[in-house]
Image 1: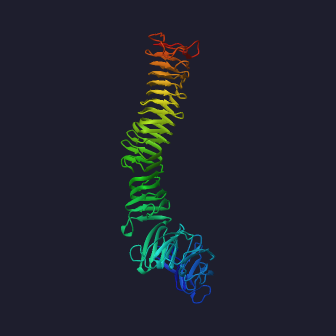
Image 2: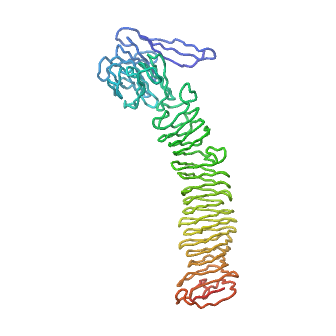
Image 3: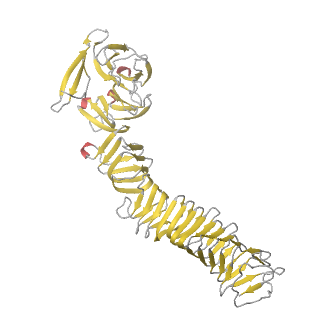
Length: 600
């Protein structure tokens, strides 16, 4: 019969037996293979009180004999290889040792029972280290009787007469303990055996209570799925945090899964990361800790009271009816929400940010709202995808990119880029476009600066017809440009102390009062519908192209040699149609300011 080797070694007094369990299509069978050893004497391969046997990854068999106070090693077929130990208390000596286990690296850990210590050796029996002494304090023993190692390197010792389990690191540094004398849950009466699973389950043979007790230690969880759904077999709600059942930090990688019947809580100081593993829980409560996950598909309800939520997956976060956080989301003080990809605010939904928030892309649909009452700094990208997309708040600092159409009702400081492409973008409060800032309008677009624009950076209108509402102050160093055969109408007052550039084939129309000492460059057409008042003398304004004056336009210049505003002499005309390219003496395209005159 074909089969699979499931178990290959058990121990008995004086003999070692080897069996296999053959699992076939019918019933399982156990087949005897061979045996070795005999009772009596101290020769190689002899046993007197054979306590335990363990098998290494390389196939060697280690047998511990408490009466002969030694350990013998054999190959898988029982051929004797070596031995070490004798009675005593020096390094490498034993006094009634009864517990033995091996690390993945082949190190041999021995519970040296009546010496009240643990000794560690290499695979050939060479002494490496020891720890422990008689007593009941932390790291002390009274007859350590069993020992087990987790795949994460912790050493667990059953301390028989202290009725407890102690945990150490691989070098014997004390970590924790649990248990005391008694028959209640978690209490022991002379624990004699201990075993670990890959999922961090700790099984203890509670000898004189005639039972097995099972515990969970997150530090020993290396793989597999832990399930907490049956109240008769353990808790149905678990937590991550200092002193909590899942430990301070839990990473669910591809080898791990967690299934919880009720609530999974991440407390202050706790960190839960989902990185390829699975998490299923009806309620996930973030209460001061940190959760990092690509998404949370196995979550029924997410309760976010405080802490940090990092969503790292490509699907990002959607704020809307039926979504993870619902349609009305508040990131309050003490909360931080970080989204690696996109956060989408659907129509009729709102996210209010009082605490920390970042998203590589914030997408606000028409009818959606982003509200930052205390202000917000955008270092990434915001897309506003409809005329009713709203950004609200006290201040908005843009170091990244904002595009689309909608309304921004926050005082904007722009150090990045703002783009309007075919649509209307309204600014309800003041806008400061700093030196590194860039504001552009493309296609048939409308930009409303209802609270005014102070421009020290660049404003570009291109490739179609644009209308700009609101008062603009173009500061020294600021540039307002038209390109691509565009027509731009400025409805509001313009103070130009920087540069306005109108490219070939483009047409700039100024519908309000225009003033300032800045130039109008480029070969396109500049048209003044209302008054044009250049700066105080001595100054000069350069025009690179044609200048048109509307039917109600008024040009006011101050002539040199007079105190500004002092009894000017005026020459009035009801209509002055066009400067053309002859705006100064000769053909210099320069408007010189000499005496004070008004053209109307």
